Image 1 (cartoon, rainbow, N blue to C red):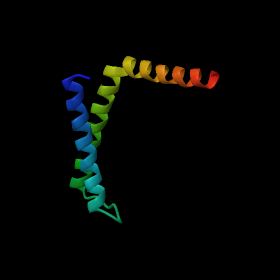
Image 2: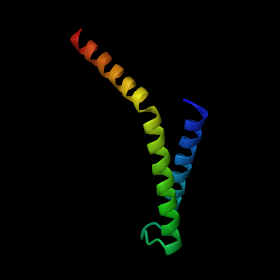
Image 3: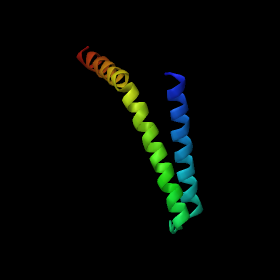
Image 4: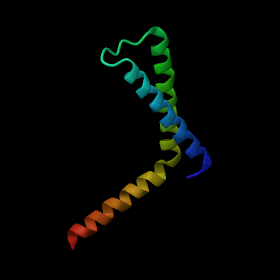
Length: 79
C-alpha cells in the first residue's frame, strides 16, 4: 500500500481512538455534551471518509485477495 493509504489508515485509527476516549469519559451514562457531540460527529466523519477512501482506492485488490482466499479454501475442500 502507498504512503497515502498508510496516512489515511492512521487518521482513521486515531479518530476511532478519540471516539473510544469520549465513551470512556462518559461511562456509564453516555450523556455527551453539545461540544462532545460535535467532536464525536467530526471524528466519525473523519473515520468514515478515510475508511471509505481506503476501500475505494483498493477495492479491486481487496476483492482479488478475497477471491484468491475463497479459491484456496475451495481447493482444500475438494482434496
